[in-house]
Length: 488
Picture (cartoon, rainbow, N blue to C red):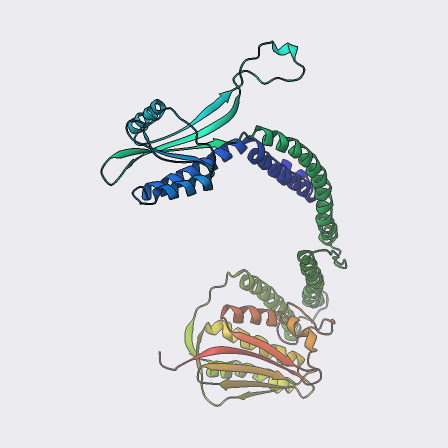
């Protein structure tokens, strides 16, 4: 679009100049072009209001005093005329002012004209005309007014009124309209100077304001361009307005988060590559050994290949499942089941690990608890949390699973005795492949994606979850679900 070619500085400049221009046009219209029509409108309104007051009090015994007061207040003459043109009451615009003498025949004509016009009439008339000069205009120096130019106008308003005896009389109100041409000429000269001054001032102010507002925005835009190029070490600096400072804070926060995301992305690629490369190396090595060395196709060597292939399959499966969970493509199947029994069954599958490597898994609970959830996914949560605890528990190889039940909730805690996690690092343990010590450790059990999968499954269940840990005191991963009764 063409408008997008202009910077915010020039757009602000144009808007401010346009605003001043519109204000000047409105000022010219009201003060010069429409001054006379506004003046006539105000005088017409005031004379009609006076007529309304007189009509309401036409039969009052002190009508003459009311007429004098209204005539003086509105600088007008008031006459009440009968059907023959005879003046019954009249009042001048000010005390002692000479009342304008209007021929009876003319008042008679106004009476019938108003009667024929529906009982009300309004007209503007010239009181005098400039008479033609005896000599031609070229005999004079300067601009001469044309013949017949209006010098003074009178506003005449007439209205038929019925008095209490049923007789119709005419209310005749007239006021002089002061010529506004001289005022218009004065205002025109003033407005020319005012327009020139305002335009100069508006240009200077618009330039200053547009530059003042656009400068920090342009600076932020330039810095944002660096951020878009992948430079996450930049700092957004802009001042002058609260909104600019808030934008700086937001963009600086976004830059820090993007830097963390980029770091995690690189670690993810490195760690996934490591987890893929290790089993692939072992599979290739054992396969070549079986192929090249006679008698090496033993059951143990084949089992190593099968185990490493299974680990690869698990990694790919977890990556795909995590992707589906994060994209919201995984559909949960809710049903009521015994959570306590499900935990017992899961722990039974660790019998071989307990016997061969000396791990101790303790399950503490007081009663069987039922919940309504996706049993398969909750089992996956338990597997991943227990695997994580096994991978990071202390030298005593002790892991505790504790079930805490209240009337409405059930909380499951998986506690290890490992090195623990620093407080500032706790929010990040749920990220894929996030490593506390930044040294990638191949999990004894699982693929390293367990906590991220746990997070996404629990969030789909709208469950509370978290981790409590102190450096040197182990970790406590927990989640909480709504409890259900045994009966359906």
